[in-house]
Image (cartoon, rainbow, N blue to C red; front, side):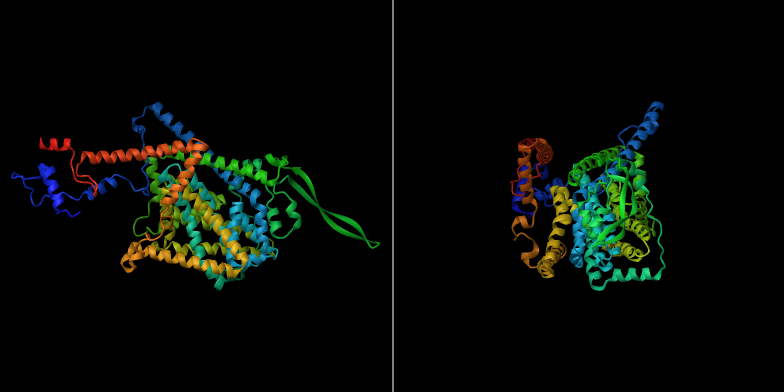
Length: 635
């Protein structure tokens, strides 16, 4: 509506006498602003904080100087107890991740070995990539899937060049753990927004690195050639096993729950038929191999042969050592148990951190973790964070554990997304150094190939960091993770869709197309990729330079609404959840009631503001002040 329109001027002079001069005429410079501008001020609360800003954790208790002696002693004792509980919950959290990995191996370990066994499929780089993703998701451990690849290369069943895409896929699959952990913080919208972005920034880094480096490796073999030069240049001797730092602490508990014979998966992958009938659950923890001479009669000629027999000396003491249950049943029991402990520990860790990180403690921690070095050395801070992430991952010997530990810290606002990104990149490097040390302990005849695969993993992550970190403009994973965090905060069910799509459905689809032949893969993948590139380019032009687009493409309104908006899908899913809530439990109804009350409170607040200020009206409503307001103004 034009500010100088007759309707506006007449309304302003008639309903608002305080805006007129002594003659009853409106002064020329007094114009009521359009209604929609003030409505925007109500819709956009100026006091509303940016959800991506780190929240201030306020200290609601008394200051230290205001406490008496007894209060100070109680506060110190409370802090000590909270710290001990925090360490205990972190210990249980890490142990639950280890048990979760064992559960996944029991459920899908033999299937993973069967997937690796088809060497013809592994010769296809795309199929090798998705097999690496699927196997790592099944066993929840990139080190396990990498060790299977090393075993296959050492036995001559797989060439080093064919193993490189599998290692890339293992790098992607290992990021599923912290994505699952982020979903445990879905209770608070803003915490979930930050936590899910902090977890998926790892996913986007790995996927974008693969999109660039996999075609480059398939065309030129650059990683294979580079690592070959490194191996040939140095006279590398076999070393000791990788240091076992974190496992020394967690093994007493996890080994009391379950112990696995991980060689069974490798034996299945390398084609040992006897391994299919073996159980992954370790029954005998101490065995001894002896060689016995047996005599056999072959066509009346007696021959003597050496036969190696295994003698069981000591039985294992874990819970399932005496349980006559199949691997699948034990795996499902451990899966439910580990997820329950994982969720409980994560919730309690977040609660404890929120209660401990208050006042000056929060200020100090945030300054240490999120403050850059002074100018002109600010750029060094990110690289220091990369080294810290690599060192911490080397200590705990698992990138999944480290990234899963920092994910809740990103959610509650202790670590910013910009700082979590280099820590995650360093974690990727740290997990490869452990693999390099493990490869150096291989026998002399397989040392070169084992070490070459580990170096391929190392140089792949280094190349990814060079692509997506040094120049701030190229830090695309941060922007993508932020956009996904906003989307999942508005539609929290989309997090589960993302998890299933990226780590299960899409890899399985690509694997099926690869098994059908490269013609089917190219015929389906190329149109999808072209369409995706077209959509990305149009979206960028719509936001930056829409004038260069045809009028029809300046928005997606010409498409059916479910194709360019998630609101219709949200309605369907919410209706399904409401139906489930009324039929199955009252939890959904209680949650829905709480959200409705919050929305109703906001709407009542806005309506009250509009009632108090008669200028706040909708564009399509007549501008009429309430009678009480007019009388008060006239008085």
